[in-house]
Length: 549
Ligand code: F6P
Image (cartoon, protein in one colour):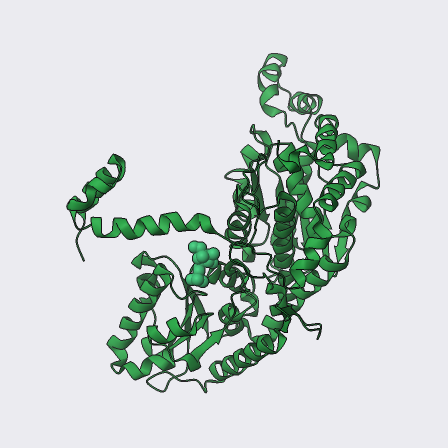
């Protein structure tokens, strides 16, 4: 047994789980009319309701003991102190500095990084103003009307999710698009309706070596030059956001058009950096800074609130409770907010790339489960697709619900219906429907007893399915910044307790390397013997039908 699972706090939770396993949340709510007050927290304008979880005060106490045993408070301090918490890449993870609005220094290796951070923000502000005012002009002298962010993973998902979420704040006359997939279909479908003369490309890549991004950026440059002719025009249409000036230069983008960030910013935590330029262009620098302010407020909460009243800590520990004690395999993200439709995809990277690990910081195999499969869809759509499984399937799927009290678009009864559905789903998952209730309903419908007996098992809902609900008055930049930062820190909390490195991603390397060796074999059959028979067979098929380019 590994150190963690053999530890006192873990064993105490295991025993407690045996007692809690059969406890129904229905009974917990019935026994305590104040349960909502006891298990919900307000943060600014955000409400975090975690009362619909299979927990008691003792559960939380034991989970916090586990966190303390694993040194969480100290690990949070070390994270904010800019220590090299990413031990396999030997770097800090100080994305909080990017949104530090406190005026306090934040240091990496003893050096305050705030002057650099604020310097890039100032350059972004200038650039955004130039684009918005029309002072920045393309090769034909026209202002920018379309911005295309070319990036993948953290250089795409964060800004894309935020731009979608903040669409109501979008500047009229400027459209922002995202191209990530190396499948040319995405690039070509995006460019089809655009005019090269009024299109600005943002090449977003921390390393500036990512194959998909460079392939898309090259093809975008060719598309531009077919219209613009002179390569000197690239400078008016291409800017880069990267930590690698040399590679940006080699690609042919003027370093004067590069917005820098640093290796202490992980890709999936980078939307607050220059990678957020697409956001600032879409909604304006002021709104971008409100987003930063929302996240900063959460940073302050995370580093100072006691564990028992610390929202990301509670989120993380609840996840551990279900993953490691109840055996939950997945976690559903269910926004009742169409503007958050990319949130599940964004959090997928945030949780699965960060904590999808099976060795501890010191390289030992874990004997407990780590990150769950994160998935989801906007709520009401999901209700007509996969909620059947959430309610009556054989798996326990903890879920997070999100909704704004006010819509950006008050239209008739729409928002009332949306909110009613959101609240109804978490209530139904929690309480379920007992056989007695189901029988009464069927009797009330006037069905004969034998039909009732036949239908009854199908009409029962076990309930006891946990969820959290996040409510906010309106989906503002500030509220969104806070929500995202809560999840970033949740991920850190879980990684800290599991003793894994949440900040590296070696698991994406093997496939990348193999793709490099498979690529030539798509043209040349002499290489087939290098591969297993399945890969060789697939290659044969591709070669047979492929139109070589
Ligand atoms: O493939 C994984 C990854 O390294 C992610 O962590 C990262 O967000 C993405 O690729 C893109 O990387 P880059 O910004 O360096 O192009």
